[in-house]
Image 1 (tube, rainbow, N blue to C red):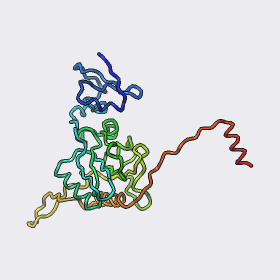
Image 2: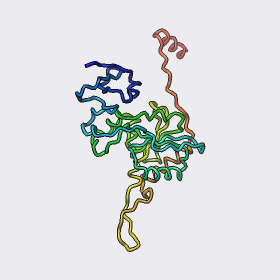
Image 3: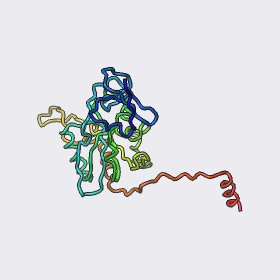
Image 4: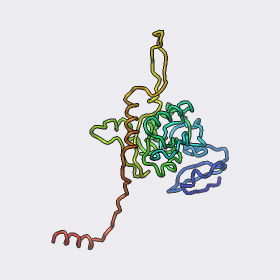
Length: 260
């Protein structure tokens, strides 16, 4: 069996080559030729299945951009989606965003595959971390990133932060700076929760399931608040501080100057 090593940045550029991702060695990704032997921990066609066996049934996404609504109307916003949405739901999402002032945006999948969230119980954050798409290429020039639901895990690389942690908008900020993406992140709940089906009474007083638009819930109102924030705030771009190293003699000189 022959092993080929490629730089990590080239890992997804292999395309349809007849290779499997075997694992990461240092800062590189190791690929092996197809020999019909499936080994635990490899990435099948760019999909890392080490986190769960159920991910073997995941379907790879060829185009991660679900909505391209780039215009010259307002600042550009990146909407990072938590899953692959049905076209009907995407139409509702577009209308919802436009009505709340988001008129120049792309909605991009955080994952490089389609898989039911129910198959990832207990491993959701890990799966989003190791199977994220090349969504960062669409973050360039964005005034901010709307992180939808579990897509937040692809940004933070962990489950330490969740959307509910940002609900308290009175005493705390509802957004944060990501040094990895070098942009401001505005978490909201999943659009599946915002456009949740509700029971409603018909004219004949019979109950039926209705889902014409966003539900009248706190999750919807919080999302609307976040949309207003991202379009109205003019937040600065933060730079990583430069660390200056000095010798002990230089340190002593600084102490003498400070003490004089």
